[in-house]
Image (cartoon, rainbow, N blue to C red; front, side, top):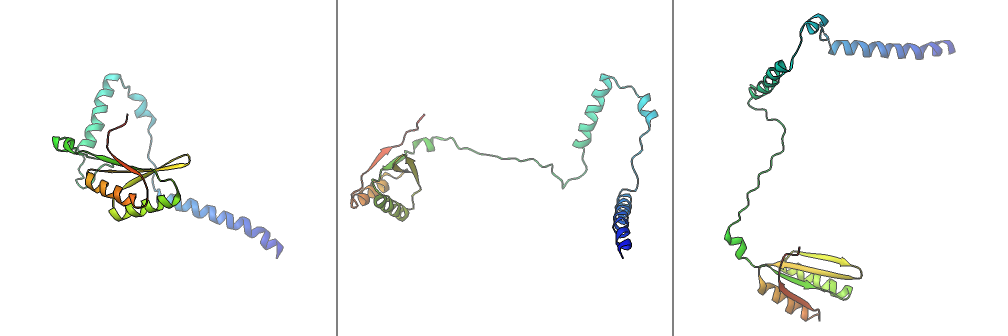
Length: 161
């Protein structure tokens, strides 16, 4: 029994190796032939390379497949830089809540108005900023926050450099 187990492992390994070799031969039936005589006879100068360089580029340019596109990421952006966008005035609402209760109240009021806001953490204080083109909506939000005794300021937005 031991003698059979002793020879069984190498026989299985040999059978697996033969199977892999046969499989590789089956999927690669012929290897490309390299003729050393043809390559040695050709001497290529720099002038000959210019002709060959253009030939492979033209080969890909004349590709017969119409449904295939080479994988290239292409992004097209159209920016309307008309006077209409310059006429819009942006306003910024700045809220500096003093406690977590005031912060919660500010967030709830901002959720009701559906205005996007940004919260900045600076050391111990938090600053909520809201940018909008509607000054009246920001002023109404300031009056709502005054009912919670939260101070907020509305100012024209200027780009910081």
